[in-house]
Image (cartoon, rainbow, N blue to C red):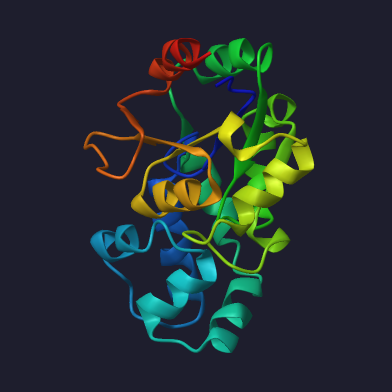
Length: 207
């Protein structure tokens, strides 16, 4: 087996966005006169899309959540300065970019591009699939299969790095190699790593 492609989830993998995500929901709640969610409540919807998170946190219909998400609340702009990229990320991506196709597959929407541009990361990715480009969110494999098709590779040549069980399930269902990153192992992942700099030695061993 030869790995040709490395796809990443964005939030929690490439970008530590929890503080920014909290600020976004706090801002939206204040703008629309809703109760302020706790940090724990916001963190519980971290792996959902923004609209899905609004629906769950505030018991909204999808129509109401979409309207709130599209309002001019400036929540993203307030949250962006609170986001951080993980240590040595530029060096890690630069090295991998010389050997593999790289891509982002995320449940984040159009702000994906603003986040990547803010940190100067867009240049490292050959494909970016945000939630506006597919219909079925993870754990459905649609988003991953779209990225794989765009790059013209096969699923079994593709690694997907995610920080949640839905990422692992999506990769497995797509026929890709699921790599889970985080402090705790995922039982469904083919491989578990703690930090992004552990990925390249793992990939070298697979080639």
